[in-house]
Amino acid sequence: MLDEQLRILKLMNEVTHRMDLNEFAGMVGLTTDEATKQIQELAKKGYLRKQGTGYAITEKGKSALKVQTHVPDGLEFKFFTAVGQPTGGVARSLKQFYEAVKTIDAASLEFHLYRKDFENWLQAVLKDEVLVGELENVRLGELKGESLRKRIEWVIETRYDAEALR
Image 1 (spheres, rainbow, N blue to C red):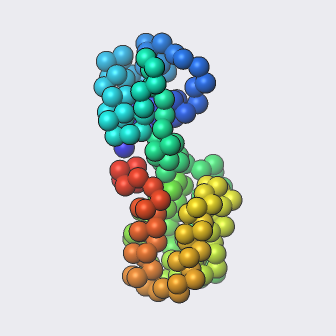
Image 2 (cartoon, rainbow, N blue to C red):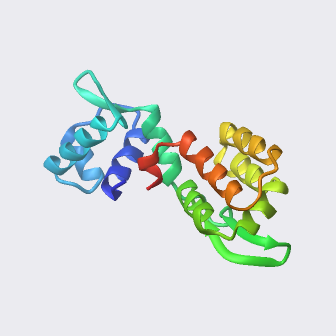
């Protein structure tokens, strides 16, 4: 997702009143024509919907924001392979978490999943009860190695829009 599209979704999610397009464009750092083009593209992809003479963010748009938004400093997820053995991998957003799952040593995935670290982080920091429940099911399946990696990837891809994860 483009940075300007993310700025548009963020502002759409925060604004509680109708706003002039020129004012809106200025707030997201675009010209009116650029903002119009990006809004139309976001609407075509289902992140925004037409509402009267304007647009409103959809649940898909809110979901995309959740994937992309960085967590506050100190709340990022740090990957380990065992207690006292950091991998150096860090996730500051759900998108970064997803990307890390695709490449991090499978031993780290096993270590965190079976300690419920993923579930605890997703619940406490991202407040995603649905994803927590899905990862609990993965944990109960007792998968290992690449099978575990593929299942975690699939769970995240199923919960969130694939384009937002890119």
